[in-house]
Amino acid sequence: MNVKKLRGLRGRLSYANVAATLALCLALAGGTAVAAGKITAKDLAPDSVGGSELKANAAKGKNIKESTLDPVPSAGKANNLLWAVVQNPNGPANVNVIRAGQSNTGVLETGNMVEVEFSRDVTNCVWIASRGTPGQGNEPAGFVQTALGTTASRVEVRARNTNGDLVEGDFHIIVVC
Image 1 (tube, rainbow, N blue to C red):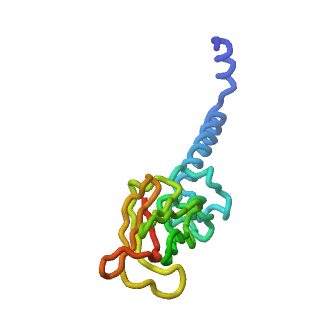
Image 2 (image 1 turned 180 degrees about the vertical axis):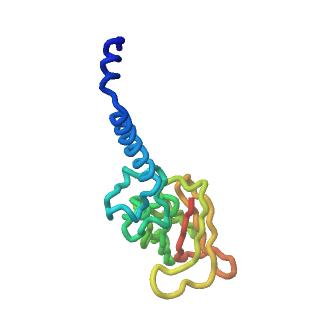
Image 3 (image 1 turned 30 degrees about the vertical axis):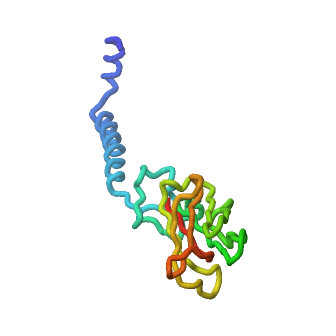
């Protein structure tokens, strides 16, 4: 600014103009700062703040009404747990999957050994199996043994009676990865 403009502006400034302008600035800035420190969740109308307006990780479990949450999309399709119920009555090549927790689960029978085929690699997983019928009733006493099958997606299951002899029998298997 040049000197003439400053002199012209200075002539119009009065104590009242400066004080009013300063008071307005302080009121606006100070009021905003006070409001920012004093507004709580109780001061907000229901549903007035959306998730996109929250700071990351600002909402904690105690602040969330669980009944309003939708299911986690992948929760029903967890890929770390595989299972099957297998029926293997006496007789050659008559084993079948009664039910399974995932599609594309199959079985292959060779002698008194069954391989359960899953749709993924199970080499780094834990295999747990037990004798059990697919419905009501009891499977004869005994136990089963598990091992990695002939491919990376198969678990070998061998049923045994109480004497330890290989037998055919129904079983349940869980694979946890």
